[in-house]
Length: 429
Ligand code: SAH
Ligand code: SF4
Ligand code: F3S
Image 1 (cartoon, helix red, strand yellow):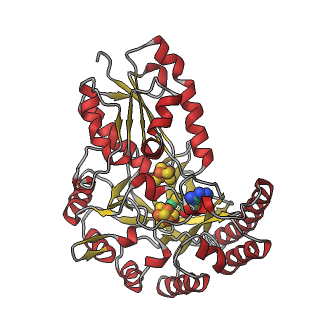
Image 2 (tube, protein in one colour; image 1 turned 90 degrees about the vertical axis):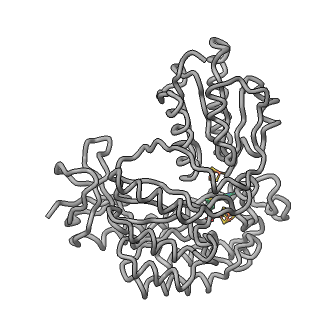
Image 3 (cartoon, protein in one colour; image 1 turned 30 degrees about the vertical axis):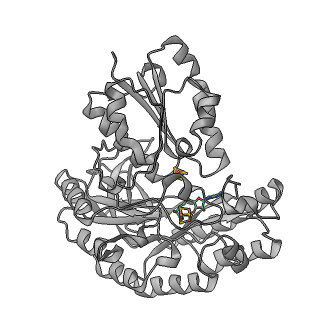
């Protein structure tokens, strides 16, 4: 191959964002540089997401837009990676025969060969049980914060979710590797790490479980903040709550997807907890860590969700008072158990329910933020926003904008002067 420029577009979750960092790591080690427009690239990678139909549509239109580039330059390599790649390789090749390679999330390492050679095989989607033992180079996008994988795949099979089919079975990365990576990050000057997995609470490496791993990471000098996503409520143990409280670097924030407030719907979703059990855990979290912020995820319009069921979700939001949520309309994913349930809900009703949810939560979020006005928060400076204002985050993961020049990667005490719906403003003390 002549040129060595790569364009990569990422859809989906943090796991995918981090996989893109690892693909860039592989390609950079082969002499590639990243470009920000497909027309300058010798390799184009679409790292795809299958979580909802919308994510799929966004990718398909991006793919259509680069077809002409391939006509102009037959040497151009188009690579599809990520969750759609894993599921739909045949369909993709039928629809877009100009695709050169399809790589599933377990097979990223194959990029090293693709960068050097023309391979006879196009599709790399076989299950790779050794995934958790393969170490790949990483090019990180953010200067202060870094993602660190601790567990791959998911065994939970929530009825609506495609992830267990795209990311395979759960595999925990050996603790020594996680610790080595975090130590190296500390040496490079990173201050905050986020431990990544679809369900970090089921981390298990021999006798090391997730709380034990957190304790080890907490000891690493140089790292100031530790976060983790995502926690499944059914696996959130008292031990974990205690560890969060005891480990000074573990941030006072947990992302704990509730999904629905009705026990009937939670059961149909195969979430394996009741609303009452969830509430109990929220109570315990707040008792142990008084300032903790709790964020969540909600799906509206799951099959068979009646007005009454939906009301229970609304009541849950009012009762729990989350600091923030992501809410989605249920999207039917072929092959999941929810797809074959009766009683699918019309798009109109889903749209109405979503906007009701978002309105109520906006008020709650705003009220919660307002209660921080006048308080003093420790803010880790991350960089600047588009307007050139300094931005950082509280330990509770709230964004703070500050109008003085401050050094990236340092923590400052900041007095919160104003709360907006999604951000805070403040002055350095
Ligand atoms: N492992 C994480 C995140 C999974 S995907 C977890 O257990 O929470 C992120 C969110 O997307 C989910 O929490 C869920 O709210 C939403 N989601 C997943 N599948 C969906 C679907 N088919 N339709 C709508 N939202 C979905
Ligand atoms: Fe999907 Fe459930 Fe696994 Fe999360 S825990 S990735 S929602 S199956
Ligand atoms: Fe999407 Fe796959 Fe993540 S489906 S949300 S990119 S695990």
